[in-house]
Image 1 (cartoon, helix red, strand yellow):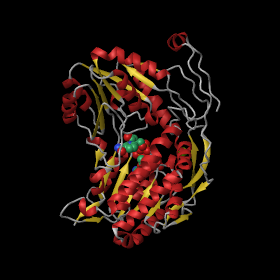
Image 2: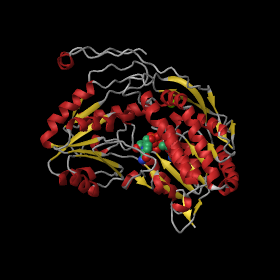
Image 3: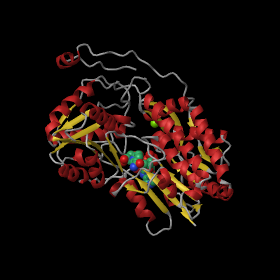
Image 4: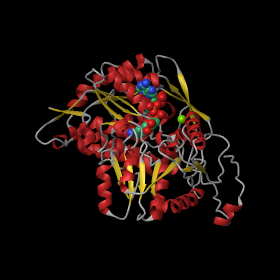
Length: 493
Ligand code: NAP
Ligand code: MG
């Protein structure tokens, strides 16, 4: 890929001498992409009744990857009918049999992990090392974990039995397309529900590719149906009368519309929405470790992470030291072609998301925060944004309040633990938080007072299918993963 070389500045030379240059290390596995992707309804690839298709671009270089079917309300209805027809037989299968399908899906995903990782990176822009080492293994792990639950549902609620809800409508975002699909499908299927799922418009390819894997696993037709399309397709999924539950992951604005729309209906709802997590660093924390944690918390997946540690709260006595260490570390992050195995920060998912990040950063500068960006080269085609840190941020700044969903960190300071808690909880969100300190007692005290669904201590962004994930306040309600996540797909009878 063509890149604009950044000039070597005197400051950069002084710090690092000759910074290391890396030879390109492109991933060469074939993603096996088609030029056109249809809907997946009733176990068949189906042309959309709308006769419309929309383009899927690669944010890596803005090239056209494929055309994707645009499902209208009639297509969504066909998907719900297929799911309703499949429900009686699927829900009556012994749990051990449903578990076998889930194991098979997990194994097939492992077998084709490299192909799916490349497709995910091309379509979404995330670094190949993250798609390969995080998204794919975690997606398979969710199917393995829930395969284990399928024949043990009676143990999830001792003394009571669990029954499936029926047909479930699911809508997922673009930041972890396959992983979000796994988070949604695996518990729903383990409990005996059937599904209509809509992926995000900019990242539909791996979802429809996943349908080929369901066919290979021999999953009965109609148990899982995929409808691709824009927000209107999502609206039809939400409003369909056959849906017994809607599970949504996405923005708080759309989540509010869904909650409003379903009010007064008997449909169940779980919402996994946005976040503006505080990552709190005390002066007694192991600083070099904490700096790595801060970098991972905000720059993983270009910061397109709902639980990203996007507000750094650093104790005033170490603020200058932490900022200096962060600025040094920023310079060694490799930004660029997501298909290169050396890349740390890949492409921003879409031109719209890039524009949103640029607008919020401009607001940060206009409101008086100081912006720090490394002297790095960005590819000339595609959508890229350098890793960015703002110091001198106060709680009233937009960059401290709004979710940027990009590689941008806002640094605030505090003096006492009470002030840290007050500032951390001063947000409409409540999805996640991080605490870095040498003292176990302080970790426990902070954890009980922080209003966030997930709190990491001396680490960040650790995920496990056995551990429930979800938020408070405008970050949504309901949990995904673990026993709690399972219970959101069943009713006690
Ligand atoms: P979004 O605009 O809300 O989109 C999410 C999904 O909803 C997409 O599939 C989207 O389709 C669809 N959609 C849009 N309008 C809809 C409507 N009126 N009715 C039904 N569906 C509709 O969010 P996004 O920008 O893709 O994703 C980023 C957001 O998701 C961030 O705020 C992030 O924090 C949140 N997120 C939360 C979690 C979590 O677990 N809490 C995880 C990941 C992301 P189109 O793509 O076609 O617009
Ligand atoms: Mg795309």
